Image (cartoon, rainbow, N blue to C red):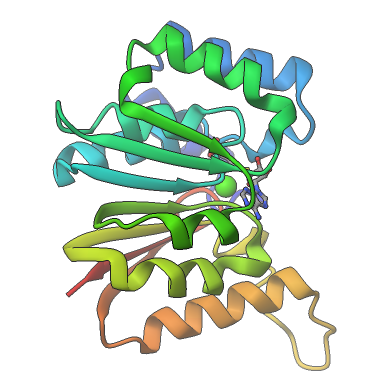
Length: 214
Ligand code: SAH
Ligand code: CA
């Protein structure tokens, strides 16, 4: 589901810096070879992530949910020269492809790509993080948040993707709520009530929650 008129979205994309050859290639190969290509961030959201990261000028970014590396590259492009992106994914079938893209980007030395369950890896990371992008299994969004919030630097930014879940977070009375939708409802409520952050839910693509550690 698109939340804005397709013609307006097209206009937004026409006025968003164009993707370079590598990002176009990642999109092409994701569509041709990978399951669920709709999960990729894509042009508008990717550039937004890149620009937010450039504003934040982070030393350490954590990404939860690498997939084919599109969002990770956008984030890595905003790192400080001595900065690092740690990006986690449980799906090792994509490893060769993703490592290839990171090599091609020229940023591989700044990207620590780790395979495994993020719930197990995050407790082994010391942080502190200046930026975190939560984009893995929706059911664990609140768990990921609990694991990272005390490892955020003051002023650190947490971005969580898909928090509008194609609009399913608007539940009508008596309607049955599936587990992912419930998890996102709980996550959004938790952020809204957490005095440790100030937040804005941006209606970009599938909804991006932005929370800044106070
Ligand atoms: N951030 C990517 C898209 C991520 S799609 C982009 O914007 O282009 C979600 C990813 O989360 C999938 O690749 C999936 O394998 C991964 N994932 C799901 N559960 C996970 C877990 N428990 N630990 C780590 N990664 C997980
Ligand atoms: Ca996503």
